[in-house]
Each structure stands twice: as structure tokens, then as C-alpha cells.
Length: 295
Image (cartoon, rainbow, N blue to C red):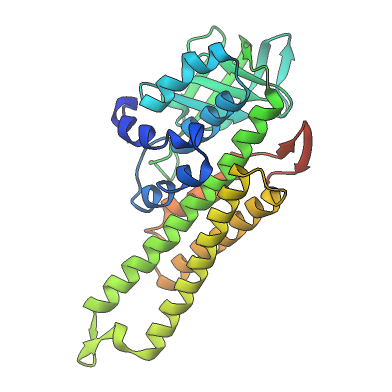
């Protein structure tokens, strides 16, 4: 699949400006519907992770240089963490095989889970190889750094905390969108399919299954927005709320796809759940890891 142009995402990224400026609750709103429609724009790696990291931990000069371009869609930013990253001063050696939209990204926000750097895609010593993946709406790239210069973010702890929390919430919102898509399509099908002279949606047993799905999805929706609001408000329950949202939404998405027998149609939404294993990493508060990311 051809890599989409960054410019084509301008409207979407502008709508998601709220993720950097006005809070995660508003940023989560378009994430679910976008993933339900298999929208191929780089929200997770670019705006959610890289954008949040720069907004929370970057210097004034770094924010001024990169955030307007990320938000407008003039460029796509990449994000990855490598616990084995070697740093000699600000010269970096390491990499990751799973950098979302890495083939189109410039710059990259890179972390060893302790410090954070901005690395330009045209820096000497960097190699970028696009990967072939099941989900072509979220392409991956193998990014390798060999003695590559990086520009450190002064607020590394704040950058990591913001990026990780935002990524968990975005992935949960995407999974919620996948679950809702399964339910919506199944309801539509139940009105079209005729059996024994009547739509199958009129049978009580069928209604019960749809009602069970709706209850699970609404519970997941409440959990996702609880988590987003808890982070925005600085609540002491934020860490617990984030993990509850991820758990509810992921389980709801998988269960909905399985029950409706359209799991293949929701493979993109489900892949966003598996992507969390590579994306967010640990949650950090005040420089201390309070919860390890999924593995």
C-alpha cells in the first residue's frame, strides 16, 4: 500500500489539536470512529505520542519548531522506545522494528525510558526500512540508529508520562471504536437478513446477544472517558483508570468481533490493541515508574 501523504491528514490532525492543548478527553473523541472506519492517518505515533511528548517535555524552541507542523499535518512524527538504546552524550545507537508510520516520519521522538531525544530523519547514521504488516492502515518501519545525533528534551519525565498515558487512552479509544463498529454492522445485518419470513433481529434470542454487546461496549466507553478525564484533571485515580479503560475496551473489542463472526473485518481495530505492547511502555510519575507497560 502506498504511504499516504502527510498533507492529507491536515484536517484530522487539526481536529486532534485538542490532544496537545485542550486535553485527552476531547482528543479521544475522534479516535474510536476513525479506527472503526479504518482511517489511515498517523494519530497514535505522531500526534498522540510524539506530539504529547514534545508538548509536555520539550523546550519552548522545540515546541515552536515541531508542534505546529505536526498539528497541521505538514509532517508526521515517529515515536519509539528502546530499553537497550546506547547514548554517548547525545549520540544514539539502537532502534526499533515497530515504528508506526516510520517510513513517512520526520522527526522521531526516541527514548530509552529515562531520557528523550528528537532525532531528524535525515541525520547521518540513521537507516529506515519499511515493514510489511497485516494492517496497512498503520504501517511499521524498522528504524536503526548508529551514532546518530539527538536533541534532548529537557523535561524527559514529563514527556514520558504524557506520551505513555495518551497512548494507552488512544489505543483504548480505538478498540472501543472497533467494538462499536461490530455492533453497528451486526444490527444493520439483523434488519436485512430474513429467516422464517421475518428479520432475524426480531427474534428474542438475537436481541439478547445484541443487548449484552451494547452493555459491554457502554461500560468500555465509560471507562475510556473516565480515564481521559482523570488524566486531564490530575486525579489520583488516573493510573488505575487508564488500565481499567485499556482492559475494558480491549476485551469488549475482541468479544464483539468474535460474537458477530466479523473478526476479519475488525482486524485493523484489533491490531491497535496488540500495538499497545510496543507503543506506550511504562507509566512514569515524577521520574518513578508506577506501572509497567504491557509486554
